[in-house]
Amino acid sequence: MLDQAEALRRLVNEEDEKNSATKIITVTSGKGGVGKSNFVVNLAITLQNQGKKVLIFDADLGMGNDDVLMGLYPKHNIFDIVFTGLEIKDIIVEGTNGVNLIPAGSALNKAQELTEEERKLFLEKLETLDEYDYILMDTGAGVNKDVLSFIAASEELIILTTPEPTSLTDGYSLIKATDHFKLKTTAKIVVNKAFTKEEGEETYKKFDRAVSKFLKINIEYLGCILEDRKLVQSVRQQKPFVVLYPNCDAANDIHNIAMKLMGQEVNSLNGAKGLFKRLFNIFS
Image 1 (cartoon, rainbow, N blue to C red):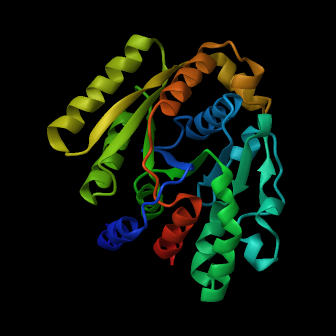
Image 2 (image 1 turned 45 degrees about the horizontal axis):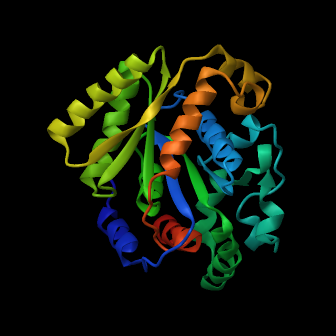
Image 3 (image 1 turned 90 degrees about the vertical axis):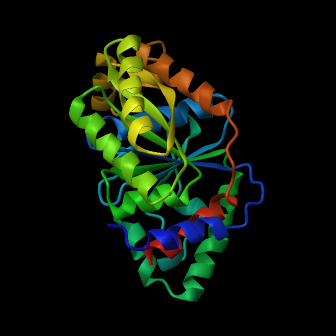
């Protein structure tokens, strides 16, 4: 399916693995409708509230809605820093509680249109992104070239699923493709929309049994987010639930997941600039 899988692995492995403070995490899911973007936005805000500097890169090509969830209305996207001469600070939107957002969407496909000189300029302007502690890549859902490319280019992978059988099946297909093309050796799993903590844990165990039996990739349980009506209310008001309802069950669950992430070391692959170098090579 992904004919340049070998090239993707080589591009990642050839990057200079010098230390960088920026931790780049791809968040994705096997199917849509599992609450992925809502998770990314609220996780970003929670990390920001803990004193971290966080950037969301909305990498859902053509269907990004992180801006909508925060009530933002961006005028520019990432490639305006080349095509219109804007600086990176001009296209970054400041969202809730100081979280920054880069609207990318379908604009990322313009990578193939850039000349060598334009790419150099683009990467030079992106160097300032290494001031962030976390860059969260919010990709589209499903098993496709775009999603697998983002997985290959980032350092860590979080896959969101729900207890629904269709979500588990599609999540397994995504893990299987990631393992098949050797894009990652590990992945973290978050179970969303669980009725109880026990259901969240049992859902993960069911998922882990299938992965352990048939695949070589190692997965880890990052936690679950309980089903909560306040999530629906917050989306309708375009205000993240960790801000609107900071003491609700889902907000507490996000807090626990954030604390777990902050306690883990992430091997860096040359920070933000290295990330975009890899993406340029993949999408061109």
